[in-house]
Length: 120
Image (cartoon, rainbow, N blue to C red; front, top):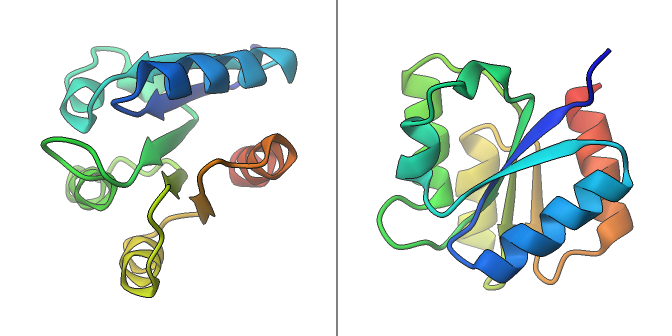
């Protein structure tokens, strides 16, 4: 069985790089996207098993992305991350179907546990 492919959607290249390294160390594959729009335009999006997305990004936010994925009936687990958590943001992300809502900087073990739980 091939390793799980995890999309990393974050406008910060350092975050994408560090999460990609974390995934690789856990035997998973990561693919980075600088924006939600970039993920939505990806030709092989059907191969992605789980999406890690930042909440606050230029253009489409993480919850906007969740809502667009639901509109397109693209059912993949989504884990939302943010450095600026609020109760309202958490409630909106979870209501939109987020598997988990994590605060940056995210503990690596917590992130891996969330991904493993999301992909089964």
